[in-house]
Image 1 (tube, one colour):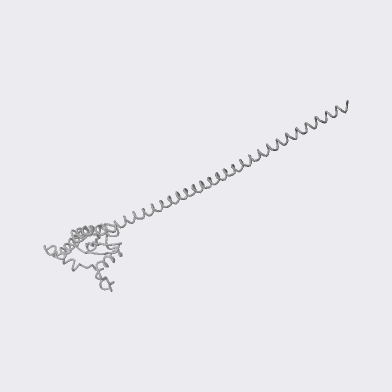
Image 2 (cartoon, helix red, strand yellow):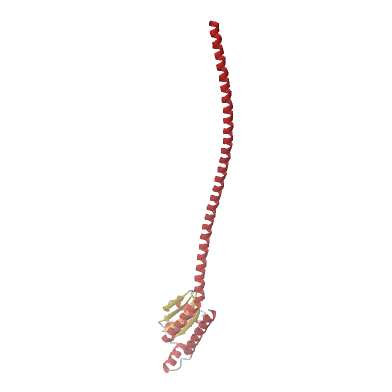
Length: 235
């Protein structure tokens, strides 16, 4: 994967170098010589002559010049391609019929080419667009992987929450089962104790019943003896 990207970058650099070579050596035909001459010594309007007599702002590069033209709205954006944070733009300055081709990252100009040739500008724009796409491959892959990682984190959080709920439910079930088992054991113990107490009560009741029967028999004998004695006394 790295070697393929290096080959692509090398091919892009080769194409861009070739285009710069063509732009620098545009002396094949007389019209091309005229275009180069026009580019090297552009015709200045009275306003430009007046502006040139005034102290000019310090412009250290073509990128600074294009940025200044954009801020003053002297150029028109013809095409723009975005690939991640990279991109390419083709701009046109109608006043001078000058084309600007820019390769940028996060809207900061990285490479800027100025030309009077429309075909050269279109070729440079296509090359810059392809280069921005190749440069953005790693960034786009990182964005996708970051999104997948974030999704995996969210799923992990959800699964952890589900696992925590299931564990809490299981713990509650185990606790309830232990409580039920403890209550059942306590009930069995109470039933055993009550059964023993009931058996003891039955025994005590039997003894008391026998005592009552004995006392009743004795009472009956006493009553009978009293009746017999009363009958004898009456006679």
